[in-house]
Length: 304
Image (cartoon, rainbow, N blue to C red; front, side, top):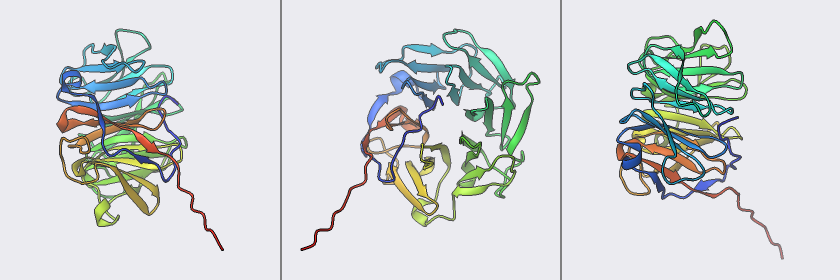
């Protein structure tokens, strides 16, 4: 895997106050996608300047950028080989690929509009969630035909189990289960391999305090716990069982610009030790929430 899936216990907790990893002077006014690979190299898409910014070796400022012919890149994904896939669909209707250490890109596939989520699975197939066409497509990168197929959604917005409405972030598990942040339906949908109907992993059936409002990001850790960027509730929550949810950062539910608040966060990524990086869009910054504890307390009963 190129992406981090840390082992996090059900008792894991994060500092509720964040440090600002990068502000608008570095990431512009429209930071969107973020990706942290297993070497803790950090990639951020800056839609204002049309660049992908890269931080290596714990540097404080970007050490490299990718930019050729990009226009408002939204999402990105980096493979274990260092290949960088970038959404370039806003005007150019395609996905670009930079191979390691190259300064120019290759066109991977033509798409019809912005990919608000990109993912490459362990079979080397790439997925794109289309915000304007309400579906997720998949294409085998090893295929000579370069043909894409729809794997979730119908192309029309709707709330039924086989439909999506303005999907954003996506995640594909090792068993090829597809998770989709079904943004305008306020839910996270789980599509089993080769199934057109989904079940809701998180959605409107949950208790009121955990009902989603415009979720835009979804990530799984190594134990299968589900993390959701709940954008219009300005928080990140996680699901540690089929019926237990908890808020981990931004838990006031109110937008703001303090170190403990978010304002319409968009995407998140773990680093190798379980810290969380978040694109805090309306605050024009990248926030880093430090993993505080990853252990459950042990209680002992003493008898006289």
